[in-house]
Length: 191
Image (cartoon, rainbow, N blue to C red):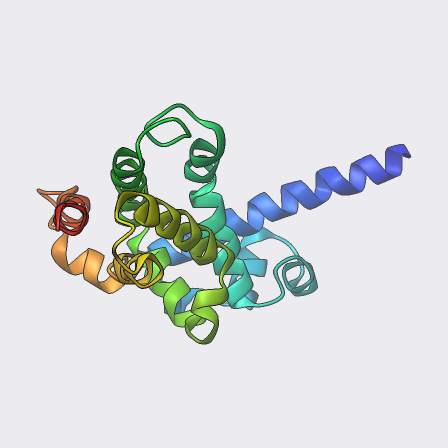
């Protein structure tokens, strides 16, 4: 490997971080409608081609940002300590996962809404969605083998709607959405 090759990877990583930061700023400034490849590239200080090559589209850009936001949760599920990581009973893992996903959702409702809009046609093929669904359906099948775990995982994930999260989360009760999702899952598990 050459020094030139390493410099390219460092530049690519720097550009990726700058593009994701720019996307965050634009989302915060004006919501999903405010995010365009042109605006992101200009704010990040990179060419439009750099954004297209790295992310492919606006949907790809939003997917990458959502994956970045959920990276810690994915790592905790795969190898972290219980209850998120392996070793805890399915019910505890499921509730811990929903708590973690709820925290991501509450802190990123605008991103979720923009992501849902941009990826509407391919929602079920989105890498984050597939990962969350696979994890939830496995835990549901273990905790309640008498239920349709595949469908229920989709149903639980359906409530993670950016507009709904913003609607039911008042400023004085920032964890209301997550608490409600936890109550829903508990009712399902206790059936």
